[in-house]
Amino acid sequence: MLRVMRRRRLYESIGGMRAGIEKTRRAGPDLPSASVRNGLDVRETSVDGHAVYTLQPKQSPQKAPAPHLLYLHGGAYTRPITRHHWRLIAELVRSTGCTATVPLYPLAPESTCRATLAHVLKVHAGLLQGGAPPSLTLMGDSAGGGMALALAQALRDGGHPMPDQMVLITPWLDVGLGHPDIAHTALRDPMLAVPGAREAGRLYAGDWPLDHPWVSPLHADPSGLPPVTMLVGTRDILGHDAQDFVEKLRAHGVPVQLHEGRDMIHVWPLLPTPEGAAARTLLARILSLSDRAF
Image 1: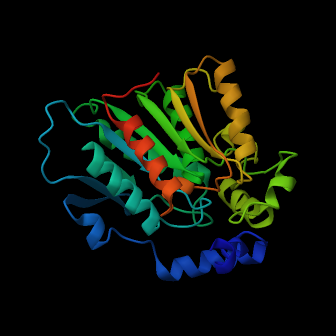
Image 2: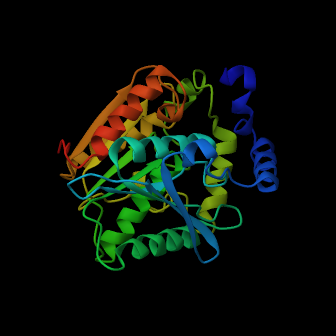
Image 3: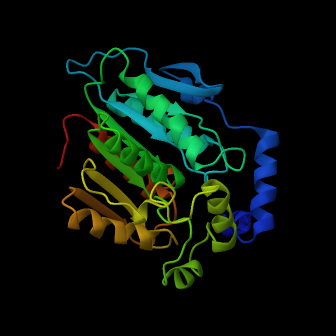
């Protein structure tokens, strides 16, 4: 279906990437739909003029305190949140009883890593006002996974409270896309391609080098990061760097679980497929306070 829709054309060229950015700016981000709002309390606030959504069950009969989820959406740092993100987040809230905070952070090229990360740090600080949540999971897909790792580094380096765990869904960890095996995997990847993705990474980096550890966390020192769960697909050009980063985490003593989706594509847990549904069940189990596998 992705091939028929020519979804990959967004990333096959610099021109395709820039045209896609212009199109999404005219359309704006997807907002929580009526089906997403069904049974949920959805509130909108703002941080520096950018919307921040909070989703939670309208009724929460749980005896134990519910976990809190800070979710950073993907989109190559240049594209806004989509209905697929909202469906995933709503499903997690309904199945676990958690509260989810979802910032619609500033995008490149209007913003760059320096400013966007500062914005997400403000959102995180807002969660701690009045006391830290009983349990905080930091989750992100694709570029949101890379940003989650950048946020964790900034919190660690600044001496701030850390999330209890991180969940990274097919994260983008090197915007330079320099892994030698990417060229081979690109022949089988129906969603991503190097030229446009690399241009998006360049726009996001701004005046920082592409290998800056907050731009490309593959190059970061992961010491002291919270436990990580990583979901990686084998038909995803970003999967090679994610696999390498898992080994780097282990070498630095960070607890990590790897869930490899054989023949799965980029962000498959967000997609309306049986494999996506199984991955969402896994994510809910990881998020639940009663199931910490580390």
